[in-house]
Image 1 (cartoon, one colour):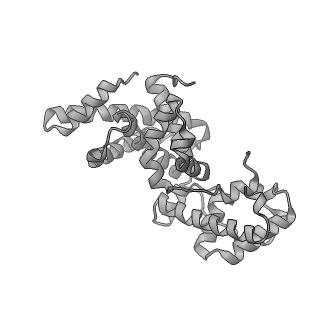
Image 2 (tube, rainbow over the protein chains, first blue to last red; image 1 turned 180 degrees about the vertical axis):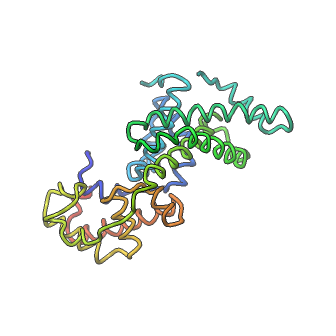
Length: 77
Length: 205
């Protein structure tokens, strides 16, 4: 479902580990995503957080881009 | 530049040793992190003010330095659940992105017009202007005024309406990204609860 202005304002409901909790698993998430693993099942809380937190979302995109640079495009792409 | 998994394992072992081997490993990881920091700054270049571009090299070096310090401090927490280089890179991404956001806002005032909630329907800023229903807009305004503490209202408005990065708010308030996010998270939860009570649950799903 697309983000409406009200959802953008009020965020996504659900278990949210916060910035520190998200940082703990950020490396595992990006590797799983690059592998094409079922990230929704394993990283649901993390995904809720990055939908709600622009800073952590930007960092996640940054780490994914860094791995693309270092290791080449993800096999799942 | 290609980093193989075997290289990650060697780096960890070398960082745990003493003397010249460890120093050489620190030099190698620092070089990698500096490369990553510069690439990330380059990726964000178009969104950075000109005055920040002049400082990018210095910011990247600071980010790599601080990331190495964090990695050495937390090395015993590395469990091998990802490759070491991936684990290490997340520290420099965090450091460089925080610096870039803060420098981009360095000369901008962090001020909020709290009266925005009193006249959302007729003069809302862009983030709110397209709210579909006037009644919903009024309900949000009322909940912001009545349900949030002063601190929650300030952080919620700054982060969502004024689009001020939470790293910047954390710096201005002498706090951390996580602590500011917690305030935002609690404010949003209160507002969702208030709107659900008021019969707008379907707009939040």
